[in-house]
Length: 225
Image: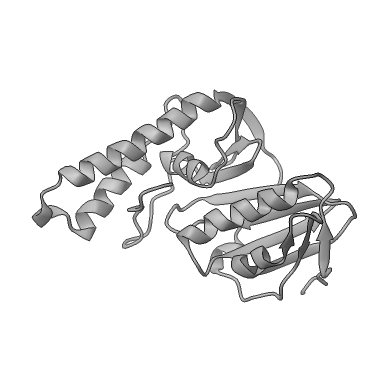
């Protein structure tokens, strides 16, 4: 059943509208036709996305000034157009037929904190593997730099676990590309069942532990920002 959508949501904290705009802008750089699922309840808005080619979920949350109950999938581009950073509001666009992932979100509860990770170390690791991917790609002879070869290299690198954890490096890469690894605070690593969640002050990235393997033809062959 479709949940009635309030036309306007008002954020409770300064800067939340700008944070949402920045998140959507980065998301749209990877996929111009990206969609996001919005869940609002108990005075909190959750924005869920699956950035193209990363094979992870990205989650942004924000407090709302007034309680609202919403569960819809909308165009990320149209949602971005509805943001008023000065007024700290967002006007919700019409619902769209969402991608298949929008109906299969990670669990909402049951998360257990399993580790604290230094943001600087995770950020350095992200930069290091990005550089490795770029260098190894550039070292391939032109005749061998095929899509299949580059995809295989990407799978090898991005499916590795972050040192001391089961979190695949593709989740760290996504957090870096989406602007979640700013600041110097510690990051929280959580798990529930096969899911792992890297939680930062700016958003979360969720992946299956050791199982985030891209489908054929969708390897992570991008150069991150």
